Image (cartoon, rainbow, N blue to C red; front, side, top):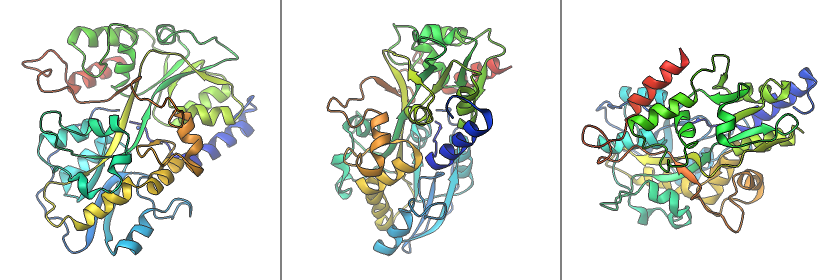
Length: 374
């Protein structure tokens, strides 16, 4: 899934306004992983694999520093901190070496759980675990065994924005039929396309025919734009080259602050994801690892990360101060705060996957997406 970073994007958007004269200014399916068997640290140090911006030391901005205080207050030292931008990069790193804690998105998390490359987490050792939104906790809990394999950290969802100066919105089907819509370059965009069919309730658990129908909705638009960098998305609206775009509430917030009158198309459901911290299976001395998981579950750490990255915090107590605007954009500060309108990305369950089940796997999604991009 795309993981934005507010300061860099905000500055870029401002630059676009000045240069264009406009009226105003991470989920990919994850490959399988087979970590090496190299030993992890057990001497008061941690080896961490995460997405960029998830473990900040203040080097980019003094306002983004929640890893530095962790070392000073716990005595644990981060011996290695590797950061990546995509699930594919993360899976590649995991094939090269072992880590103590990893922040993974849904597809990669499920792959690691299935391969027994992470161990269950003792939630009694996570002081603020009960403050994490229950639907997000349930995503990382095995329904059959109640084993918990991840501590939810940040989450987001997609929406389709439209320029209200040019179009009147319409429904999801109308958006997908437009030549002037910019979609995210990801196979999981097929899940959003699947939601145009009112009969689809679980867009990440598609049969072969449902996957074909979703792909068909995106076929035949050779000049359509796709984005991987959010600057392309911002530029599309700033220059008036697009009427619609698949985005996040954070992008809507950014564009509206830049005086571009974008609104979100009303849909019955939308797709989302949650990134969670996981504990590697081969970690035997877990003291510092649990100290890290504790810190990442705290409202303060999640508040700083949410404000820095433009994603919503899993801790319901974190939507204060500098994270308030981001939480508001995701609807996380309303009294009727619910997540049931979001279809969170999941790996299809075992009884749904081939060869016994009817669901398509992510390899099929990737292949269909490659065909669309030809």
